[in-house]
Length: 327
Image (cartoon, rainbow, N blue to C red; front, top):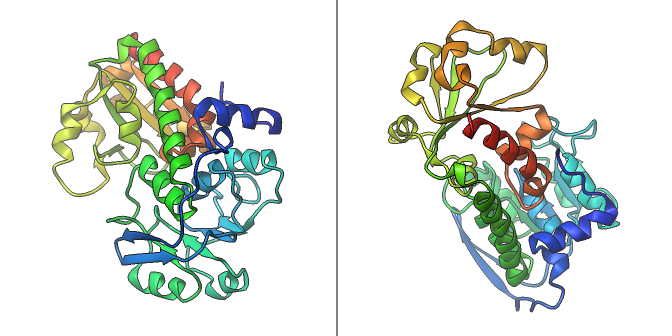
């Protein structure tokens, strides 16, 4: 079952995962701090109090450190009617703070709106910022972009970058260690995962074939931490640039694996995709070795792993993998 972090249990979850609330005595970083990223260096002169996040998962990292941003991105796919993901809403409530301002960054960045918020820092380590956008944001507040490539980077790196920016490097390291320990415990509890190959992909209504995620996609290390290994077919595809590849139904055998993990948005139309003859005959599906991740919030949790989304979904994710791996 997907976990729900009530206000009472959120603190316990932080303790269990080694998150910030568990380590109030850890030393704070001295300022100024300088962070290096794709567009150069950003120096933050003093501990930020008013934080804006842009892109995916960074708001989760900030919340895990016990801070609540003044503004976060709207996330309508997987979020509630206000565009807030469930684990984000639960964390804000648990911390006893008002909900941040929700901003839609899908088509453009509302610079004047951000300026009015008077942020001390803008964090975008997992985003698609352009040089022009970065330059404009930097006139509003010190801005931290992604390390190398847009929409790339592990949740661990995002957590550590956020921790450094907020003067909480030691707490960020404790968070990473705590979540990694949970993965290690799950792997130890499921020795059947070791040595099994997997292919991670998605199927969507209105599209043909399967989107197969590259070995460089951020979803993949999460599965590898549980002891599974990327299938040979996906490793071959991953020699090409890109984070996912369209594989036709006729060519599914090229990405065969012991376990097939597929995302979909749920509902009758998504169910019907699995009734297509070529999918039904694909060995992992025909033999019950499919772990289906369905529903928008669950798909978001597994697509954008973070210190908050992982505890929210990990038990269900592991149970689905175990069922498929044991077939």
